[in-house]
Each structure stands twice: as structure tokens, then as C-alpha cells.
Length: 221
Image (cartoon, rainbow, N blue to C red):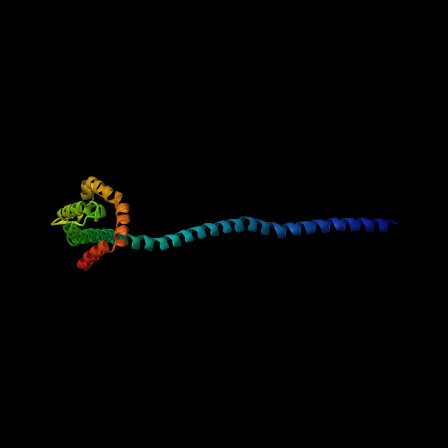
């Protein structure tokens, strides 16, 4: 029995020693690795991170630097282009304004010419015939006053544009000046327009009166 007990005790001592050896061996094997990993590894990764940031920052500055330098001399030409564009737009607008004024005056001249023909070739001949059943003034209302007013408007427009530089041509002032007479004259003309149209339809049903109108139209042609 004793040897058996000693054997058991020996095995226990051997196991205890083995455990201590394993523990010390494990400690010697793991501690340096953990320390190196914790210290060198973490600091190494930190140093690499800072280095990466520095390198990235330098590359970014290098990429930005040429753009800043190149954009500096490009600024004046861009401003010059914008000024040229503004000048071009202003010039086109002024050219358009000149054309509109010229068209306005030409339209007024054509209108006055038509009124002049109507008065000379229709109204005056009909008056001279002194047809009892023909109301010339009722048919044409105050068209002669319209003619006079249109001539006045054209005269004011010519005065405002002749020998005057385009930027100094004040056209709106002309219409403001003649606004009152225009309203008074055309109120009368428009008020009698429907009656004149009805009167014309009635005259065209009368062959004798209709023939007088045809003669006037032929004269116009």
C-alpha cells in the first residue's frame, strides 16, 4: 500500500510541477508577444495613420496648388468676357430699339398715306357730288381729324429722332404728350363705327349709291 500511496503522491507532485512548467512556459511564450503587439503594433499603426494623413495632405496641396495658380491669370479674361457679353447684349438691345422705332414711324407714314388717299379719292368726290341720300360725314365720322392727329404724331416722332443719337431718343415722351388728343379723337371715331358700318350696308343695297362707291374704289385702284 505505501508504494502505492507514494506513487499517487509522486504523480500529484509531478502533475503540480508539470502545471508550473506549462504555466511558466506559456507565460514566457505569450507575454513578450502580447507586449510587442500592444506596444509596437498599436504605436506602429498610429504612426502609419499619421503618416498617411500627412502624405494625403501633401498630395492634396500639390493638386490644389496648380489650380489656384492657373485660376489667377484666368480671372481677368473671364471678367473681360463678361464685360464684352454685357456690351454685346446692350448693343443688340439698342439695335432692336432703333428698328422698332423705325418700323413705328414707317407704319405711321403708311397709315397717313392711306388716310390721305381716302380723303382725296373718296370723301371729297362724294361731297362734291352732293348726293342728298348720302351722309358722307356720318359714313366716315371724324376721319379727317384722325388724319390730322396722325400727321401730328409723325411730326413729333421725327422731331424726337432726327439728328438725335439712338440712346437719347425719347419716344415715350411723345406718346405721353399726345395721349389726350389721341383719346378724344378715337373715342369719337370708335363711337360712330358701328353706325357707319350699318349705314354702309344700307348704301350698298341701293344701286345708284353703290355705283358711286364703286367709282371711288376704282379711283383708289
